Structure formats: C-alpha cells, structure tokens
Amino acid sequence: MRIDLSILLLLHDLEPVVAGMVRDARELGGALAGDRGFEILALDERSGDNTLSFLSILHAQVPELRTLQDLSRGSGISQGAKVARGRRWLILDRPVNPELLRWALLQLRDHGHPAAIIPGEVLAVTASTGAATLYDLRGGLTSAQRAVEQNLSRSGGSKAAWRPAPDHGVARRALLYVRRRLGGLKLSRGKA
Image (cartoon, rainbow, N blue to C red; front, side):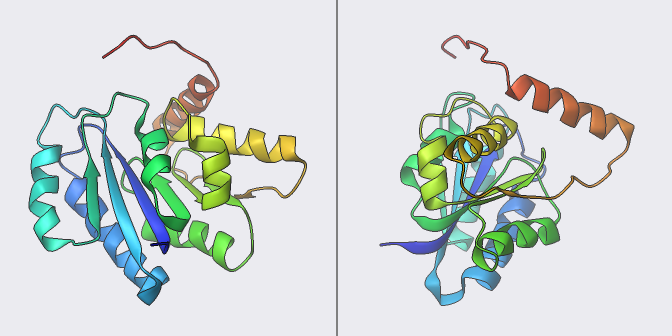
C-alpha cells in the first residue's frame, strides 16, 4: 500500500532525544499527510545506549512507527530507501525545528520540487528522486544531501529547493562545514 509520507529518523546513540523526535514526526505526519497515511521509520545504526529500549516502548504508543535495527553505520538511509512506502520522504538525524520540517515537505507538495535541502539539518525528497539517488548510498544525511544535489544537476532538470541552515553559532557552523566536507569524501569503512 502506498502512503503519502515516510519520515526516516537516522539514529545512533540518541537516547535523550529519540522520544521527542518520534513525537514531532508523528505530529508532523498527522498534520501534513492526514488520511493519506504516513509512517515513521526509525533506522538505528547500532546504538550503544538505550535508544532501542525507548523505541520499543514507543511502539505501543505510536502505531505508525517501524524500527530497523542493527544497521551498520552509514547504511541507514539506503536501508530506509529500500523499505519506505511514502510518496515523499523526510530524512533527519537529530531534533530539528518542526517549522523547518514543514517547510521542506511543502516545497515538495505545494511547489513541485523533487527535493528540499537545509544543509546539515533536513532532506526531503520525492520517492522517485530518493530511489534513484539513495538506494545504494553509504553515508549520513550530508552525504545524502550532496548525492541528491549531484543527481539533480546531472539530470539537467529541476533543482532542489534550498534554505540556509539556522545560525546556531560558530561551533555549529564549523561542525556543519566539516560534515559537509567529509560527506564528499569516499572513505572506506571496515566491517563493524
């Protein structure tokens, strides 16, 4: 069954914030998908804390939640792309202001963009763009953002909607810069 929205949560040792991320995803999905349906895919990349314990408790409260666990680091997005059933996908790896999530999804739904990017924060894609770009991706959110931009550029068609990341201060900007630069490197990872 095809639904309107898949929200992919990339998780690794996010015990303190996972419940809030799921709650925000459920509220957003309910508001923007309505009766067309949505799912929340918790993609746990071998968390060493209690992230999975919190998810197991949340399953009883959030029927839209599905968990894929014991994923190797950097494989969450590709695994999510293989099981997502939504027409649109929203991908995040940390708590993000719900207004930014709403903006990204509205760029796809109301403005017809194939993708919406807030660097280091959010990636929203149509299912066709996601499947063409993310199915075999190794890496995290910034790698996925870069891959989508490159794929759209190569196809010569439309471009992703883009919005600058909120200013979180010098330390956060430095972290986003490093993540973006490392996202472009093809580093080999050993079996974890």
